[in-house]
Image (cartoon, helix red, strand yellow):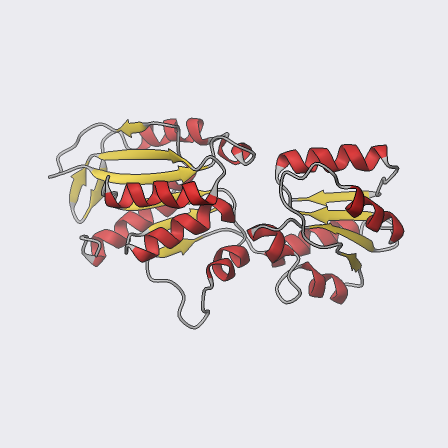
Length: 276
């Protein structure tokens, strides 16, 4: 059970949501000591290496901003406490993300956890926090793969894990508004991998298919593929057969590059490309 009274816990969550979330560099960052009885510990997990590393590129810069902002500590319950930030690299691996989160909770005894960068990073960290009753704030994941990917019940929600980010409804709204500004046949090719994001974006209930149908677009979804695949010939052939003039999807950076290079080589050149 987390040792903080509810007031202190809410104050810590408010601190995190106010700007701490985007932080990190691969190190323990001790901020200046203040007049509290002990140091408050913030755990942070993000993908700093591996195929998801672009999501962690800003971490080192933001942690420096946090150091400046918290150099005199932070006030909780009328007292000022020094703050330390313990940062872990998920290495773009969901299993490692869960492992380092458990270490931060059980070994380092962090007071609050922050996590950022795709469901493969955020979901296992949030699950570890929910299990161990440790407050957690997450971001850079559409809320659908974060909530439903963790088997969330809308009637219950979660007790210790909090999330802020836009949802797929926002993506669909922005993408289709752009597409409607271009003359196309409204045929869309969907590139959705077999991961948390891809399964949510391609979901027949909460993803792109029903929303695009409602807006007059037709979606060609050739099925899920494994991230870091080397050959996109099957997807490209399906999109060409459907005469898809619009390409959308959500892929990791190496897959985006491989697909686009192979698409050009194989003569698939859509008018519009909108990839998350």
